[in-house]
Length: 45
Image 1: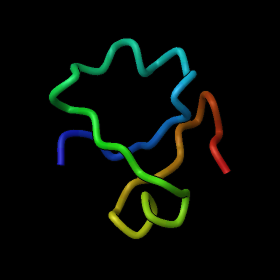
Image 2 (image 1 turned 180 degrees about the vertical axis):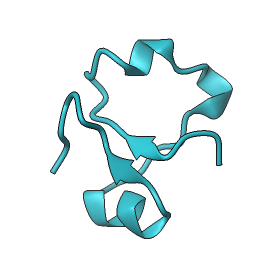
Image 3 (image 1 turned 180 degrees about the horizontal axis):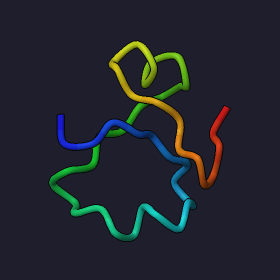
Image 4 (image 1 turned 90 degrees about the vertical axis):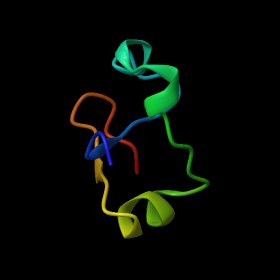
């Protein structure tokens, strides 16, 4: 796992993530259960 955070697709921090480091989740629960924490900038819920 490269990062430990998940963001909304429109979060300004997403543009700094390399495409091959992106993972997509269908829900907050799915991302959290995979070990990711919500982004402090966009605060996905």
